[in-house]
Image (cartoon, rainbow, N blue to C red; front, side):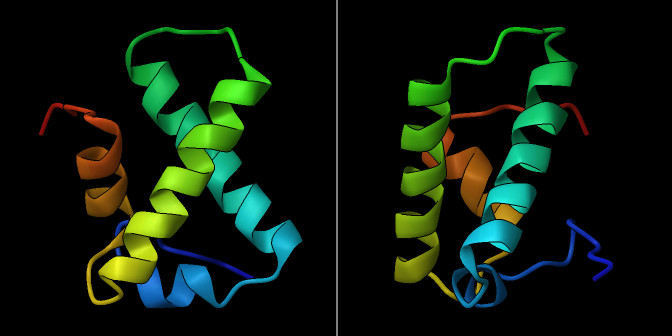
Length: 79
């Protein structure tokens, strides 16, 4: 599977199986953490963030995953 993360919708994310969901949320974590040069992974915090994104996506399936992640987790990315 090839995914353009900028275009991935919440509806698409919530339909994924566990392995694909885990892979994409791990990618998101790396993407956002690299922007602040964070090299530490707290697996408990990661699991909570992934659940928060999934819950937010279920509530707003037409949004993109990246915009939902940024809103749900309070992330400010440079444009």
